[in-house]
Amino acid sequence: MEQKVKIYSHVIIGQSEINPKPNIDGVYVADLKIFTDERGSVMKMIEDTEKTYLYGGGISRRVEEIYFSTVNPGVVKAWHGHKKMTLNYACVLGEVMIGLCDLRVGKTFGNTMRIHLDTIDNYKLLTVPPGVWNGYRSMNDKPAMIANAASLVYSDDDIERIHPRDLPIFFDWGPYEVAG
Image 1 (cartoon, helix red, strand yellow):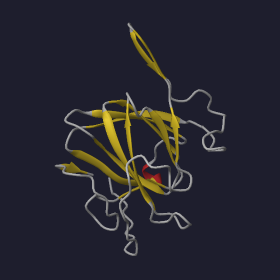
Image 2 (tube, rainbow, N blue to C red):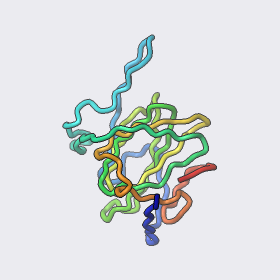
Image 3 (spheres, rainbow, N blue to C red):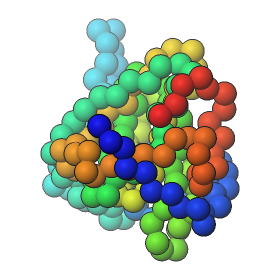
């Protein structure tokens, strides 16, 4: 499978705080609910795919595919950007740090964000619009899993990839052994 890589040599990206208020147009973060009792728990992710919400508007929750992605300790799965797909991420196992970078032409071009998601204190829905590049890693020595309620069915034609150590996205993922 041939990978398509587009180099943006004119971008200089800075670092950002973990879990800031979103500073990238179209990125939304919403609290999710976990119901727990002595038997276990139920974790809600999306209740109504037709609603629009989050920060007074948000985006349509159209979902065409749901998939789960694991990431092992010491691994960074980055960078990838979708041309048409909107991502709706929630961490369903472990803890992840998700990095975001806006490479779209517009007022938030070049902005980066980090968000920490888990199943305890940071169980949230992270919406990532098309054109915002993203990646993630486990935050500790255990595997982590994210769920993605995607607006479109996955297609190789919709995605582009850049290795996390390659320019132009300067982002501190911390130490890692494997990437891609």
